[in-house]
Image (cartoon, rainbow, N blue to C red; front, top):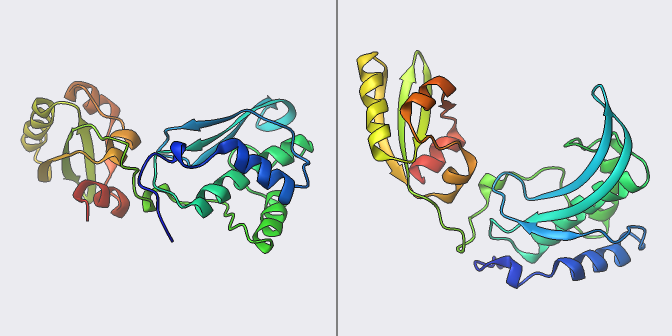
Length: 223
């Protein structure tokens, strides 16, 4: 399995892949929709559409706007193809008037189409954790200063754009007798793109902190 470390926009062709999948696996049922790249660390692909909502229920499709694929991560062609196919399933169901599988859900109709593609050799999944993927080398992370501390039994973290604000946070939490206070610095692109980076401690103190889950700890420590 070969991962492409350069910007995948120069390697993978959105339109050619869409057309190939549409012809080979979707029997050309899908209409032509705009395709675009995005630089998202939180989602690998998205089918953007305008829908009419009544309460919590989607009652009518207004327009399928575009399919977007993230170039934030290193991907094999097989992964790229599967992400495109995933979003094409969403477009297909919307086009058919099946609206209850849109908006992040992957219900019965989505599962049926996904299983068809998997039997034909396209490894489509309902979800994929981007945190397990390596960031593409063309994505440069910003320097982020952080502080971790323990409140009660909960480990928390805050991120700052300035070292002086992280130090101010450390002094504050020390004065309030929080435990295990540690500061750190990171250039990990996943940090700067996945979390809110505060410009000042005053704003951070009012806004709250992130829990240090095993996934967050891995991003902070790089281990």
